[in-house]
Length: 112
Image (cartoon, rainbow, N blue to C red; front, side, top):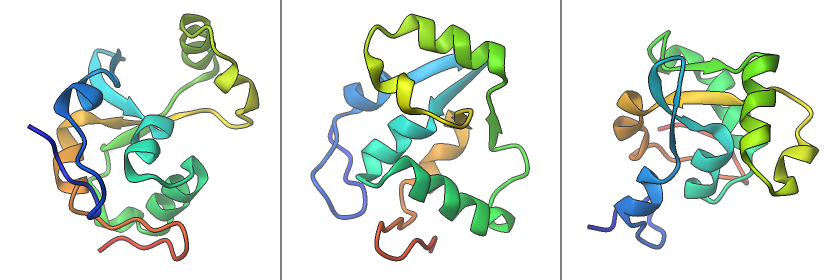
């Protein structure tokens, strides 16, 4: 069944499930995939989270280390990873359900 995020086009569960990875024995979604679901740049998602970090559980995300990042890049053939200048953040899937009701806007980043 499609899910609606931020009042935009519904997203099918298969699209979400296909973006879930297993890293550090935890089911996570990468910041770039999560931001694509919200239709905002990855930078906006990460800045919004950092500005509102007190609203989230302390363990809801982590930043990949260099080895994890390199291993992940080697799994993808496309060049989308070539432009990253910072290590990727991974968000735990178990915390993403409440996030789906959070408003993240490219024009004025805020979490409600």
